[in-house]
Image (cartoon, rainbow over all chains, first blue to last red; front, side, top):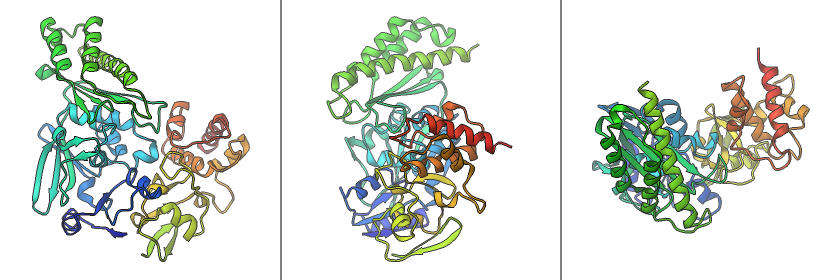
Length: 290
Length: 155
């Protein structure tokens, strides 16, 4: 096994160009499990944990650009206000030890439909920044992830960052698992309210081949809010509309039976998560008006 | 490859390290520090918890070369010259140690918690120790140990 340890992004991209077979490692929370169990032995490993550019985040006119190597712990500590949905999702990842190492860049690279960082990125229509020695391109996250554990990364590219809008309203992330820590989602749900645009944005996790947006459910509940003037009055949504939202989210799910749960359970649970998440986010919006 | 890092305050070097080894393997098999335990090899159990550059990590998930030049503190590095660390004393006194296999990981995680938060609530203790598994104690004695250590360490 060859171990490459570039000290800068420039050198990392050159290393990836010279060794397109190299497997990137940052926190190691996915890749090391493969190596420890000898399920895969990469010919070349490219260590990105010393690349300072990947560990930075910055504000960019109403957006936040987050380096692929920023850990979940730092997202919780530093970005809770700008990206509350992603910070909530980060809190559900693994354990303190895992959150100190794991990164959203790794979640993107693995492209598992169960990745906790992905529903908030999908809901807010994040862009993934892919870099090579030839330059940088930005791809919407929903086009970046092409299937279960498959993505649009080219062999000479590295995921350098993701970019998403700062929250303009309440956000939620909810997840079902057998316990509160160290759980891969049975199913999950991310939701963002954008009061200034009258928008509700949502995404299902771990109940389909990729994370799944829920446009019909989103347009339905936006219609309820517009009709009732609820964005202005901050009045209650009503139980019937919350339930209908949950049912429409259920209709968008495309789960399978697997070791973590059955498809039928996932459909049931995702409806509950969607209804509750919208209720919680809306309650927060209503309190914000007091 | 050769690996150099600071372990428990001392410059250490390991020769002939295979590139695919974990930091845990290096600590146990090459540097003679068997305190960190090898159990799940996938980050589930926390028995291999160590500090790397001041934050706790599962050393089984750190690729050896990633530790080059870093500062590692293992459970062996917590006791002072005067004897055990108050966290270690508290685990012994409350019965937080039974078979002892998970103990080094719990001690490191508790040490980390109390250094960040000297007076944790029970919910905060549970959250901080959520990445450590114990199959003997049922956790109650471990919670007692953390509360006792917190009381003793508070000024």
